[in-house]
Image 1: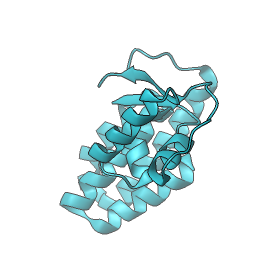
Image 2: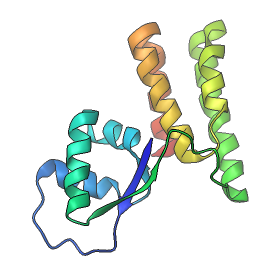
Image 3: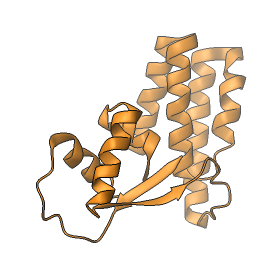
Length: 148
């Protein structure tokens, strides 16, 4: 997982549609998986756009790692994290019944809201590809309601 955000450099160059979209989505710290989901771009195309934005000094890479469990969580975020986990777990359990346990473990392992959103989006993809389109739509709707 890689996390990006805009730099303080002013936007003084023209950007293409995809570049502007990704640049705008990077106003807050955002992972590459979330950027791909929100922009609708394939990961390989997203990487090209991010490299272009980095080369122009408009976006910076903050974290490049598969493990983010070393990041500390603010106490206020911990309550929000627990609430978000509970909401997503309830959706999975109501949609999948006994099959939910395989997906709940992934959700429960998240240690930050950003990681939770990323893990939940991965679960949507897994559900869509292997289990249930309806469960995937329900979980995706809850992710949108939770993370905006």
